[in-house]
Image (cartoon, rainbow, N blue to C red; front, side, top):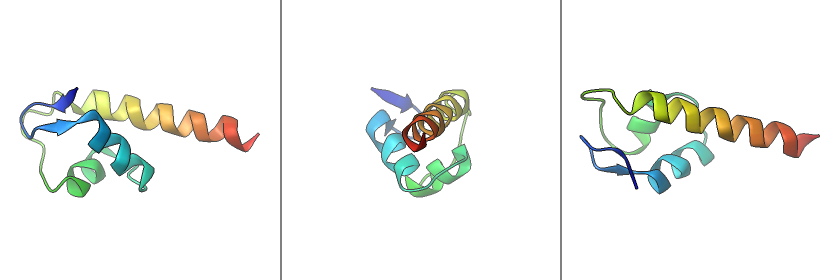
Length: 61
């Protein structure tokens, strides 16, 4: 599934960037070698980052 239609960034690419340490949408774009255009995907990226952070918190307990 595409998260960013403007840049053709897929969900698996966003998740890979997050797993590699991206903690902000700007870092996800950088990891994917692109820049935000319409920014509609930024909320989805933030949500994915928050989900990953929450999963890590539970894993640490």
